[in-house]
Amino acid sequence: MASCTCFNASSPDLDETGFAQPSPEPTIEQQLNDTHPVETLSKLCFKCGADVAGKKRYKDSRGYMCADCNRAEIEAEKAGTTPCAECGRRVKDAGLVEFRGSRICKLCLAELRDADKRPRTNGISKS
Image (cartoon, rainbow, N blue to C red):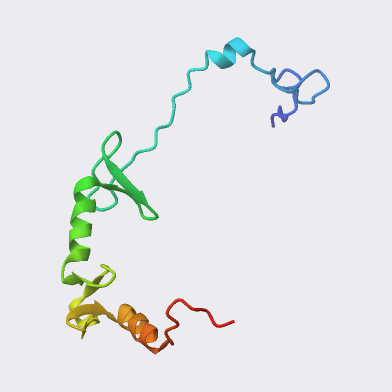
C-alpha cells in the first residue's frame, strides 16, 4: 500500500516542516494587467424578453421593460377608465357618480360633501 503524500514536504504549497505557505501577493503591475473577463449583466425586458441594454427602457420592482411593452401596459391600464372631472384620476366607469352636473369619483364626492357640512367662516376666525 502506498503512503499518504498529502503532507509531503515536496508539495509546492508546503514548506519543509509540512505547513502550508501563503501564496505571494500579486504586484501592482500584475493587478493592473489582470485580464479576467468582466461579467456583464444582461438587461432583458421581463415581458417580451428583448435585450434592452443601450436602448430606451423602464425599470421598476419587476425588472426592466422595453418601451413598446411599457406603452402597451399603460394603454391597458387606461382601457375602460374615465378621468374624474374633479381630480383627473382615472377611475372605472362604475366608480364615477353624478354630482352637480359632472361625473366625479367617490373620493371627491366624499370631500365635497364634507366641505358642504363644514361651517363657513368667510375668512373670519373665531378666537
